[in-house]
Length: 444
Ligand code: GLC
Image 1: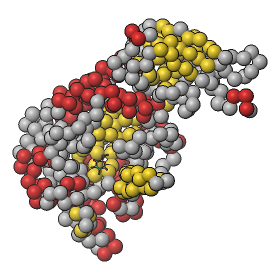
Image 2 (image 1 turned 90 degrees about the vertical axis):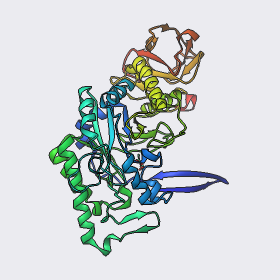
Image 3 (image 1 turned 90 degrees about the horizontal axis):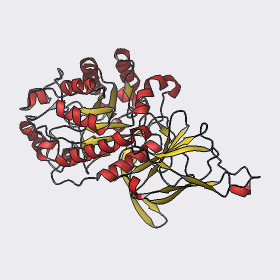
């Protein structure tokens, strides 16, 4: 269930979007083998391509929320040309960003398929001047670059005459009143899933909109089965009413570490999923720090881009992806194939660990020069270096008492000339796998 609400906290009014997750029915032990690449990948690029880019309005929600009539929304079909669509350029850019997977909209809530569906005419192939499938050429280019391919698929289809929901305050019918009609819609959407599974073999399925119906109504278990029977290693996101593999907090930043084995923060680079004129963009610094925060908390970032209707990518978007990519290139060893870092309280910043936990990475926000401090490290440090720069740094252990098991504090001096423009990363080579002291000092 998804709702926007107002929460009253001790006189403070906080506006919040809350994404409630259906309790997962999937045992992590059963899927850990296929989740390996996903856990190591850390960065994916989300692509919201759709006719909403023609007028630069909210994807699907603009007609649902009655900002524009459905008829006017659909007029955008005529302007969707993709005439400068260049999957080679897109795939190169995604590769350059450092991403290991990409997720493309195959159909949003507006029901417009971005591929050649045989089940109706509402596709960019049959109903727009683009007259072509977007998915296959992009997946081919991504796969050549070793990037995993994900298919976003909206379960909601507000344009379909057999789908109950339509505008925010009016629906066509309710499921209990007309099971037969719902059955027709169910055959249709499941048919499209089968098509996509067979045509493109997605490595990952990214469902959306499950909150409008129950697991029983969608037949989530059957949907999972029909995907996995043809494509057993496919990963399925958590928006399938309990039948997905990982959680997808949306535009919301965890403060304490999520308890899930696998999770992915999906986030816009601007303020919208699809292309809007005069948008406001996050800076590369903001995107990099958010990305690092997700990774240090054991998660991934799925960073969105919204291409224009002619298939070009906005310059601001290209800038962010290139800066992120350059930073990843320099600091990749501290990010990809790592584990979430230290629990809170040891270091005032994000951290990650190598898989064998003998290397600890400390991320420094902004231009921190001077001294940083680390608490509760039982290990001896063999060496400290600046990632991507190689400079070795010295450190001092302060306050270690010979008779006490409580470790001393580690102080590390950071000279100004090693600082990265965005985030500097230190690598601490430990004598053995990480061991932490988590107590209350002399009090226990
Ligand atoms: C939400 C929105 C949708 C968007 C998606 C991306 O569920 O309904 O418009 O595509 O988030 O995460």
